[in-house]
Length: 363
Image 1 (cartoon, rainbow, N blue to C red):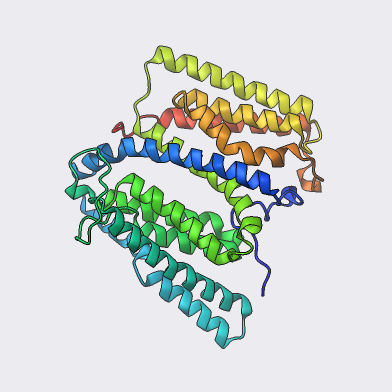
Image 2: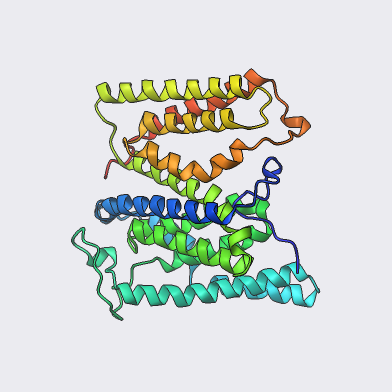
């Protein structure tokens, strides 16, 4: 059996060496917090379901439709199964254990996803956007075509396949998950699914994919810590970006106050990092500084609830920041140069999000 790396990042970062493990109590506590974060994201996304569906119905651009159909093929039914089967056969033929294991575990993931998704689709029976005319989340078991929107099967397939591949090829995890995200986006743009259908599919795909890749016995120790530390914060961050883009900016009097408070929090966070952790080795000062910077970005451009949501999502990662670690030679940057770069990046993120705010004001 080959050695596997955590696709969510904890095991691939040399700075996090020794910080991968979580105690049972930490896993349970942070898992409950993750459920809270994912539930809030799902409820808030539900507020966007019908506005997004109405917006998608309002245009019919052939190039966008063609691109959406083309991208969706990556998550189409048997496609990922065929891909993993070919990988497994190549590994078997050339006696490559790693490729053979990717193929086997990938097929297990895809077959499991097919069963779970079809069960949920027909048990929930949610109408697809073209058949829905209200904001209610309809729950009505049905085998009728068109009443099978939740969750998105294409999205679940794409994220499940990306998770399995990223488990064995962590260097490719960013393009893999970006591609899976494009598959989900294409399903919304084509009017086949609501945002919550895609969100549920993404979560389900990552969950089943990581279970298949790590194995049931090792999942809690090998996969769950990375999902909690990296996966949940990424979900919260992407959701907040989407929320900002789809909602108009508040009046300037309020926006200027939010920007000012956010910028101050980022600056204080940078000072806290620099003064309290001059070596950059980690510890309480770095953890507090990072939290203040994240809170500053959220306060500057997002609603009042975004800051607490992001802090809760980052709670598992804060344990890594609290721990000290040995720095690699290339990471020993001058203290204030390092902190200036961090603060500048945070302020640049605020500026970019402020510019993107309300680009598609449909929320």
